[in-house]
Image 1 (cartoon, helix red, strand yellow):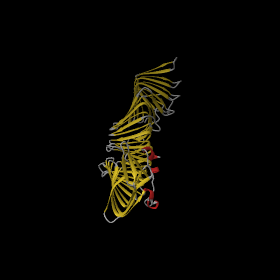
Image 2: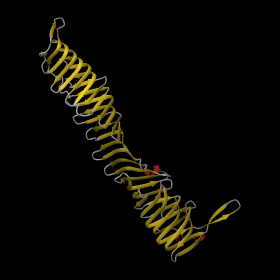
Image 3: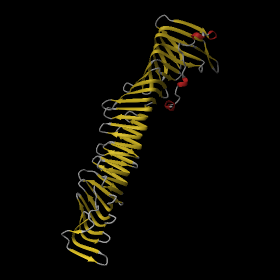
Length: 494
């Protein structure tokens, strides 16, 4: 806008036809032009009601309906001062400057043609002539050569369904790109963008948001140190302390890096990734190196996948494994590669687990391949143990109450007997039961075995407590891994 406005062309004022009166004051060296003044000076044509020209100092003062034109640029104001030596101008009163694209209005304007810089300091407005684009600010700079504006002080931008508020803004209108350097809020349709600095293309809607960055899209919220927004591609991605929330299902994600595709309805998070699922009775915390979250075409929850170093925590259940798959429709969680699950005093292991949830409550766990369930009793002095090719563990209020063992079923448990006196109840271990069968059903209460049902001829033996066989006291590959059990949700991210 305004290229080479008031630039140096000719240093002689050339009077054009139209002026009604011309006078000269020898003392002041001023030429006075009155009545429909029309002249050319340094390549600019000027119209006004009256003007003074000082040829020694090369100064021009114009008054009343001032109009300056050069090429495609038109400037209007009530009065104007221009110094031909310094090539600086100042305009007062109803200042308006326009080219073929934009119009600037303000009360006072300064222009330095050497620096190709114009400044207003007391409020101004820039409007597009060809679109509904409007920019306002308290202070504004425009640079004709670079075709850009710089605004500060309560800057606002609006264009159709786009609006922007910030403290400091640079607008390179040749690229249709805004650069902001202060707290900024952008509203585009139903999408809200916030940050401390960054850039935004008003044509492509693409942007980069830096420091306390946030994007809100209806039910989705994304925050991070740096966010990239690409709505035409349907993408958003962030770096550094990324937070993603889906309010439709109370699901939150944290990570170092995140990618979200609105078109493909998925999000990808990596680097200390953490998912939080708020449910009716409890909250589930899920950590992994990488999390992948998929919704269906309508945006409804579908599934979540976790890769490497997976850890899960809620007050009723904790788990670790290498990878997991969570069906958010059926509320089924699958754990793969050496999973371990803890529920109350039970530790369950296998090659693969399928956990059925009802809200945050455990319903059952299907354990396949080298399955085992161990219950700590008497503060770790003894362990009730179940093992087999496959175990289906049933829970009631998150407590293990029954286990169906199929294929090479084994159980080792220490039955107890209660001895009551008038004031106390003493628990006494009777001995150790070791029972093998092809299939077993075991009933439990607080980790204690209350009954065993076998479906074929079992191989069983009972050892009194003073005759325990240490070779048969533990199932093969016995390992109590309580040290790996997360004690709170914060432990799973360290």
